[in-house]
Structures are given as C-alpha cells and as structure tokens.
Length: 110
Length: 122
Image 1 (cartoon, each protein chain N blue to C red):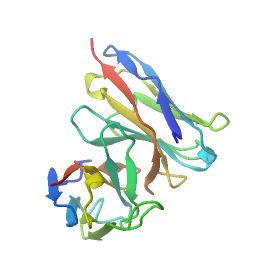
Image 2 (image 1 turned 90 degrees about the vertical axis):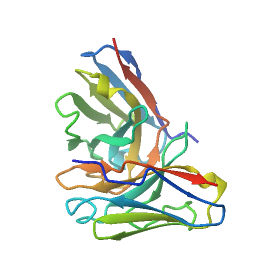
Image 3 (image 1 turned 45 degrees about the horizontal axis):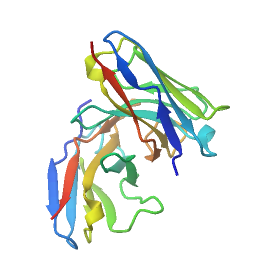
C-alpha cells in the first residue's frame, strides 16, 4: 500500500488560510470516509485534528476544517497563527484492515 | 497530563528482539482499539499494528507481519508489541495511540504517547 501524497510544504502569513491536499486512490481516500489529520510538533505527541473527513475533536479550534472530493482530501487552516506551524499528516482506511498515512506537509507561518 | 506512556525502546542488533510497552493512565483503555505507529528518522508516520478493544483481533502492516506481535492486558491498562527479527529499517520512534473505535483503527487516533526510540544497529 503506497503512502498518500501530500505537498512537502505549505506556508502563509498570520491570519491567512492554507490548504493541504492529501491524494490517494479509489482504494483508500476515494472509497472511505475514514480520513484523519494529525498535527506534529517536534518533541510532542501527535494530535488528532480532524477525523472522518470533516469532524473536529473537542478542543480543536474551528479554524481547522476538513473536506474530501473524489480521491483527494484536504485540510484547511484559516486565520493562521504562529502555533499552527507544524507537520501535518493525513491518514485513510485502505480496506482489508489496512491504514495508510500521507507523506506529510510542513506548514510554515511566515 | 500524560495519559499514554511508552517504554522499552533502546539499541538492538539486527536480528534481535525488543518488547515495547504502553501504559494508559486513563479510564477507557479496555473500550478502545490501540495501535502502534512509527516514524523513522527524517520520514513520515507509518501505521505498524493495531489490536481491538477486547484483544480478539489483531492487525499488522505488511512490513512487520510475521515479525511483530501486538497484545494487550486490559487488567493492567497496558499495550505491548513484541518485535522479533529486527532490521535496520525498523529504526524509528514508536508511538502508541488510542483509536476512537473498538475494532480496526480507522476512526481516528485521539490520544497519543510521547514515543519511545528503537535503534537497530550493529
């Protein structure tokens, strides 16, 4: 199972929006609404930001939103803040009891 | 506060074995699927293995199938992974994580540990 494809980097100024794509296939992202997004800060435990494509866990700011179209899922961070600078990974159920992560995107707040 | 705490990482020679543990200090351990996810140096996240809430079903990535064994002791709120026939490519930070569901870990992992480092080298 190949990793989902994400852009290596994305950036925006404080207050702006940034959107990260996560491209899979019809066997994973395209077939299931089990896409999650995780935020990784160096030295800290990963944090779940979005589950089931567009659901936000309690405590996650509503600046974070998720969506999906066909084989591509997206995470949008609106109103960028300095603390949003981190690595972001998507994941998707891929059938046959398999889970695949994305290649990861480093978000920089300019 | 820290809810999941991994231990057992270290330096091991190729072909060697290691057992990682993950203790959950919360109150819902036995109701949730638990997983191991790893991140090799400079690489992305990789799902390694999962185990259903009851422990009756286990799941493995192809890269570790036949070499790793996941297990859990719900009476001790503890998750394990026995790693045998270790290879250099198994070198990574290993995270344990709690899934929102109770079967295959596809519902989103909402609690993570800080990770434990495994280095496979001679």
